[in-house]
Image 1 (cartoon, rainbow, N blue to C red):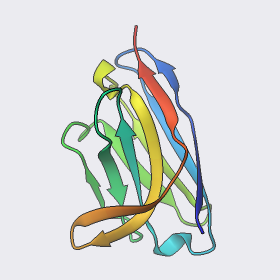
Image 2: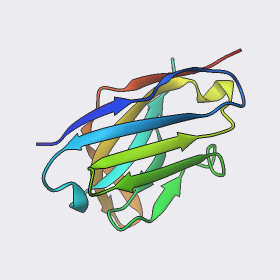
Image 3: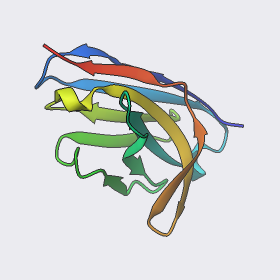
Image 4: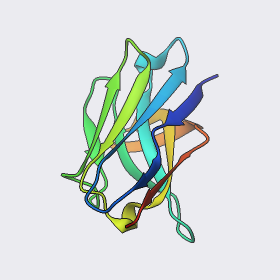
Length: 120
């Protein structure tokens, strides 16, 4: 079983930055791909970014160039650095662990989510 705990959400002004962190409790963290999804009010949950165990990444078009996903396998942590935040980035952000099938990332375990609000 994999438990995921997010932290780092909060209120930030447009143009600001936040760094989300996710701590994983599993002895086999290294083999999982990791990702971040988000869900805004009234919208479907969407993939923000994912990272393979080897470190290759992919991003939603809406966050490319602004967000960076990274992982520290020794610490069993995954991070999402969010820069140049926009009001439309407001959502609950969920950390997840999963697998890749070809180029498609599929989450299998979810954290409880952390709220990010971008507002002046």
